[in-house]
Image 1: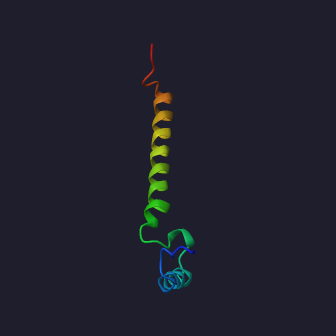
Image 2 (image 1 turned 120 degrees about the vertical axis):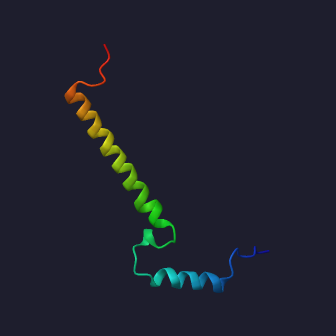
Length: 67
């Protein structure tokens, strides 16, 4: 007794052909993949650089020291 496939074979072949014929990079092939692959890491990197810069500024000017 075999289990029925989740997706019909024709639809699967059509999706495979679509993704194989795209010229973009593999991690950017989906519709919303740019958000998870590009925007979120850039936001994290920008926030990290801002916080590091603010910390260096505060240390060099002696701001925020506890007594």
